[in-house]
Length: 179
Length: 179
Image (tube, rainbow over all chains, first blue to last red; front, side, top):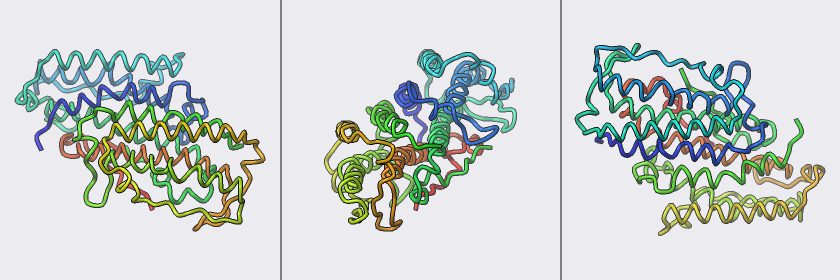
């Protein structure tokens, strides 16, 4: 199937409102807890998504458009949210995420990308050549991977509370799959 | 940790708005697709959640409150949404889900449950004795298990589009875990 950028932006534009509807005002017992040492809470996940909006996705897209394969992407800093979220409430992070995402989608629209632009290539530090279309699809799928993680982190808190039903709840059988 | 019913209702009350923010108006290429024959789309998942509101959770809670262990719960019909959703748009299902969920939470509040009520027992057709607290926790965790599934079903559509990034996206390594 032909990759359709409108399909990606339709999802990307909805993620902030979705996370807001789920997380704003939810008790800390859901949002500040994780799956154990070194794992992320809902708060950490929103911080990570916000960091990605600030430094990752648009910077990489711009690098492809402006420099093609002559420059290599910066590596993604997976721990940046620990610094950047400091002192912020979850509500502030949700506001920031929504604002940055909206600006970034404005930027994408301003580029007026044609189907052939999506074939343009950049250079990933690990994978080597990747296309602009793959980058934009990954931006959307990255939202979904963190929604998947978020549902798992939250469900983990109910591992005991659900009693015998734990065997029926697929999310409780998920051990996480990120590399 | 003591089970806290307020924690469950805080989540349960947010799920309809979250799904609405994510799914309403999203292209069918996200919402009407599944992971292959016999699997569910976003549309099917919302239909399943709506069916649960209509026939499952409150009926079981009421059975515990009124009859204790003397009656056994009906089995959950996991295919009911195929009948019940027929001819409905996703927007109609989202409206229906929100309305039923809201009414059901009103009913829970009207019961004015005390902590000791949450220890009351009913009879599950497979597990035998279960408590009201376990049922209510499972109602919330069931939302999360379908959010987990939803993110996976949607991400599946981008398995090819993300190119080499597929190895980094945990959701694409998830093979589903429901029984």
